[in-house]
Length: 261
Image (cartoon, rainbow, N blue to C red; front, side, top):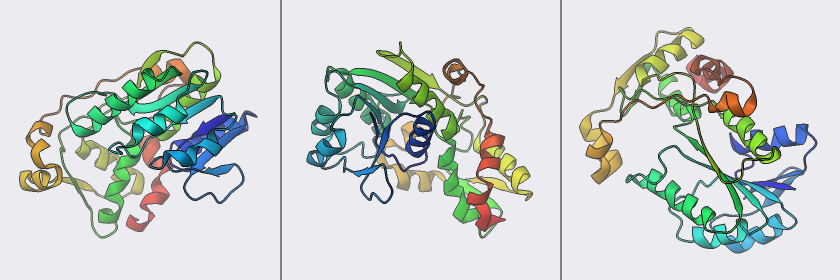
């Protein structure tokens, strides 16, 4: 029995579907269960997790509430000796900025729990670019911060496929893997790809330093100069197929930008 937290989300939902396609019993943890196989549980209220964890051997752990003060208690219930926990983490887990630091703390809690563990570390999800959809519904300009940062964003389907292999195949306990897309693209390049897929002349406009400062506060200056993200072949090694390109992701999500067509 495998429990998938965030089991109705973009990554967790695909993990659940792929496991079931292979005949594996999987439960999707959600705060609003509506379908068979979905179970109630709230990561911010650890006592609600016990029923969902009953009889569970493995957990695919998506943790959307990184700042939750009760995360140690929740991890203590989830990551017990005898279970295998596959945690969806950050490639820079433990770095000084709040998000990466929080991922590092989660990894530490899981590592010290006594459970078997595997960390799937990503540079970033391509689905985060869906934040451009509302703006493209009313114009041809996508706006955001850090436009020159070359990112190796991963298709959520590749992360899910890798997660399933790590859950089902032996030999992954105690391993940390960095998974990326196949090419580093800055925001302008990604928007141009979206425009080609959507058949519209789109462009990217970088936010001002003042806007970035308003978003990120004291961390704004430290976040201005990111190095290009690395490319790995881990997706292919784990799944047997190369990582999907950003163009493939854009084509798969064309309907999500339907309001901008």
